[in-house]
Image 1: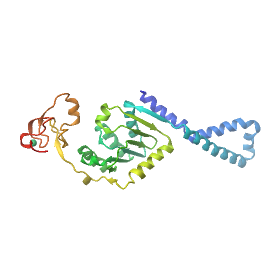
Image 2: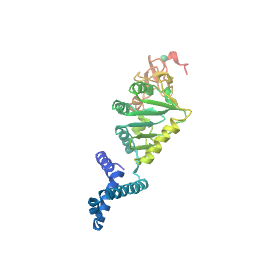
Image 3: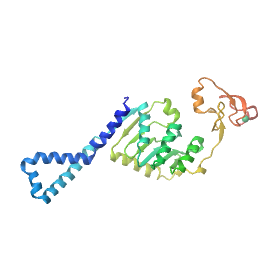
Image 4: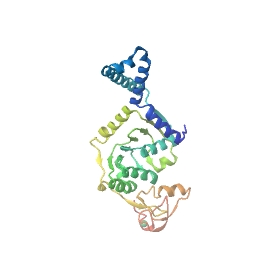
Length: 287
Ligand SMILES: [Zn+2]
């Protein structure tokens, strides 16, 4: 299912024109007019300007209705897997013009995605995100939120969120893909993307009314976070305090089977530590 990225973009632009309801309706009317030129409809146009204009408009409205119905029946939908799903996500962010909605339980996607989102805010795109409430303990989410919020982004958290929905003005992706570095790097993912206007509207309404409009939703503010900082036992970078994950993700990926560390996960002091025993002598009893 690998698709050439460039061809896909050209295809999208042509799709926009060729599958535009009004463009197609105009075509239908012109074909109809040419077809009936034999019975002088075309001549009438010049003889009886008002009458022909009414016929033209009626034909046009009728055509819009028919073409819309056909559109509804054969909406553009793609089923995608793995790398294609990830590229579709990037496309949805990058191609957003008016608004961008990112609904995802987890948020730790790494710098590329973070900068993509922030640059959209700088371009004046309205960006709204909904995360699971557990992310209010995530130091990466907090660091991102400060920048996101200062650029006008709106963020919500919900205790029951499990959907992954990414939506811009024209496209929607519903997928298994979480916004986590590990998911982008090496997870098997599947997703469905579509550009049907009615469905896009339905999804947007679902996000706005059912999710953001829900009783359990809270808007994220700086004081929504309750963070417990720890240190990566290898790089000493600040990460979430989590005894079972005392190593930052990139270190974990590059470390292979190496389980050892040089710092205490709790205090950051130099110490002989490991993934199994991440605390220094003084903090052995800390849980
Ligand atoms: Zn310590």
